Amino acid sequence: MRRSVALTLLSSALLALAGCKSPCRELSERLCDCVESFQRDTCIRSVANEENNIEPTDEELEVCEQRLTTCVDTQEKTVCERIETDEGKQACGLAR
Image (cartoon, rainbow, N blue to C red; front, top):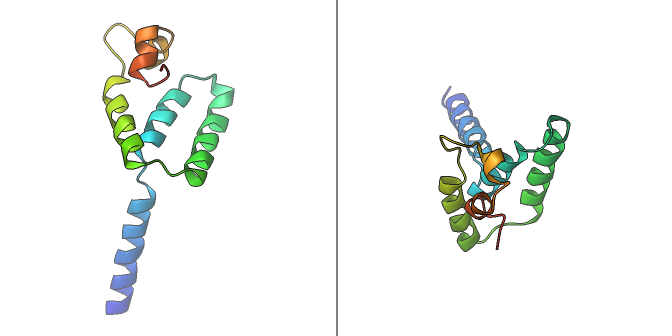
């Protein structure tokens, strides 16, 4: 009985961790929402593959976290509309 409870708890914990995404992946997926619908799944798969191949540094994760707070819809424009402007590109990390 104890063993099955422990396995259930462990499985739940692993599933919860598997659901966590890095801030860089969240930001990338937010930007994937701006591509044509027929390309969206490919974009998201590409982001997931990149995340598996490249591990962002703590500094990069911090930058992505900051961009998640600035790359958002406003009352006037959606993220997708904003990234068409220089200001929006900067807010979303698409400009240097």
